[in-house]
Image (tube, rainbow, N blue to C red):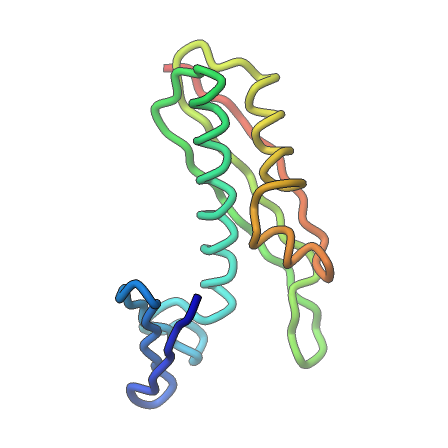
Length: 134
């Protein structure tokens, strides 16, 4: 896997993936685009959501939506690394069973999500969920 990051201007950078997709990043506090650290939170949420949706579908749960709210806490010293990240999954569906959602979220965090597994070496990652019946 490869990627390229090119300086656009000021503190804006264009990231290009090996597959040709691009993302703009703004190192200036995310004024014009997500900052690199915001992008880590987004990547963690996306990676884990892929797992959760896939596991729930394989468990034949009738899900209509999966959303995850991510909150990252950073240390006060420089570099301002993440100390804790919390993921709150909101699963919407019909007759979705709590045991299946709990299992899916745990499997993602502990076994499948590459981003979480890399981060949890230095960051405390927690998660919870809620189910909205539709």
